[in-house]
Image (cartoon, rainbow, N blue to C red; front, side, top):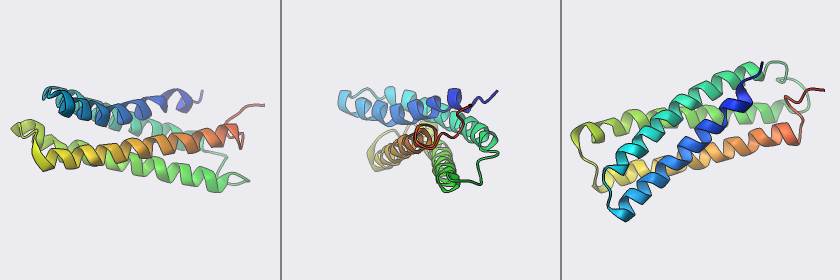
Length: 140
């Protein structure tokens, strides 16, 4: 069974909700919400690992043919999304451990998180095109 279609929604949701939660924390002055946002990016990075692994397994048999370039581009976007999400998880950890959830370091990580959220959405968009335009992974 191909688990990729079930897994891919989690990184998109977690990675886009994380910076939104951070922005809400800033606007509403709820410092503790930054911890929730960090938890969401951790979950998003873990879900991205599962999505990339399941996507690589699902891509077998699609590396040649009319949609090969699109499969490769989708895989590249997914890999960059995963790597940047892991970078945020590791880079932002000291802020949470030291309680430095203010100022430019936090704003920089929020901006980077927003970029990863956008990248996750783009990855999902191109994955959807693989299915709905090119018929990749559709039985029959």
